[in-house]
Length: 245
Image: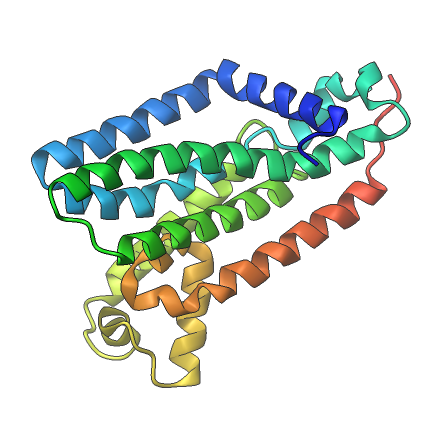
């Protein structure tokens, strides 16, 4: 795939759009700045844990113009996308965006990991946490890309963020009762089916929780749901037609 001229062209176009995007560049600097801030005011170990939770959001934010903005901009009418090749482009864009976000995440992680090794503060679980962050990033990417069929100008991202705000507020209110689900959440163990299902739903809304050690065994859930959203995208792309100007 990497050696195919068409894929290299799509990779170049997508990478160029990301570099030119002021919002993506701002997000990159914001993530970098917050990680450095946590590193300075706390510790390298805390900065790594914060990194694992926050970096998947980069996967979500880069889906802001995944489909609908592309379709309505008229850019897909370019000669590069003749004979319905725009469907292949939009399909491969999922992989390209994940690849670019993966490279960025890995560069961050390697810098922090090397610093932790120098300080003798690195533990093997950090590799698993990083893998969990990538899995959450894949989930964000697949969900955000599917939502981008219906929303434009970053509204798909805002839908996900607002859902998380509502979930966190609801959880905060329920914390007044220290029994039941909140108690199980603090312990990281759900002894019955109902509480397990509740956490599964919460994890799909706030998947960053799965980067923590207590919840790593729930990682197959976002993997399965990610492939579901990717399949839904494929079905949508098969039916997608560009409007004649």
